[in-house]
Length: 294
Image 1 (cartoon, helix red, strand yellow):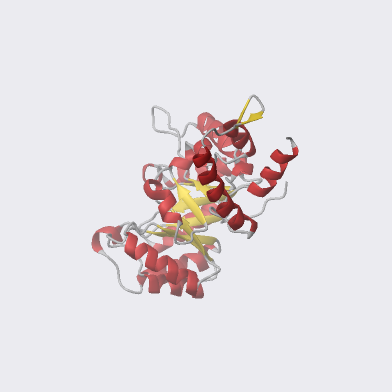
Image 2 (spheres, rainbow, N blue to C red):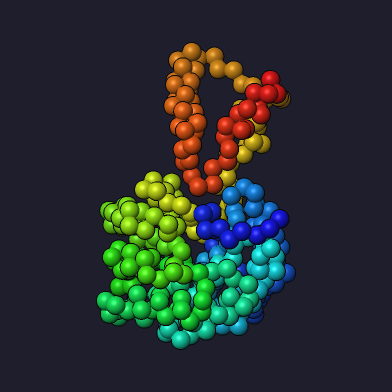
């Protein structure tokens, strides 16, 4: 299977198991990554390592590079590998981005320099920072947008400028957290930068955060509850709507009519090509297959 870099997917933010001495438990990590990879055909076509979920602040520079190497060795043949970059200055960010690229990363999740969270930043600093790292490391970038309540939040005008003027910017992880600002910025970015992938990271409000029109998700619980995120598979449909091979029958006419009304509405949308999630399976094909078995 030829690898295709894909930003329109569910990205699990993978955890890193540690030994008693806080070194990386490579054996457990590899087993965990192989489990992640087993969901490739169910919507998981990439992963993010060295994020906050992945212990980035607790790993030294060499360990962060080693994490990328292991991810690439176990999953890099088919999955898009993204590495978080969290540094205090531009030069170190460029160096670590280069190391991630050398280790097998297809792109980076570029976080703001940590000191901005405490002291704030110059108005032009975010654009110059992203631009310098993009040019210095020559690697695709997912912009890590911090919450609107933080001092490291990038205004939407700055994001638009980044997307239009920095070629390596491919995605924005929309960590806004303030709903009114989030919805406003998503709609404006959709209008001004239609080719940029927008990624939700709101684990706690995942479904709602998708409504404004997101392409992807980068979420921590996708790294441990994948089987609960993608229940709409052929096996699930057959299991839930049949008993011992027989299709379930409803005894209440009112319930049956209500389900039928809603089903017609949903089917009409599906036939028009509308997708409710970026990784939605081919429901029409599944339906045809089930009907053929009757």
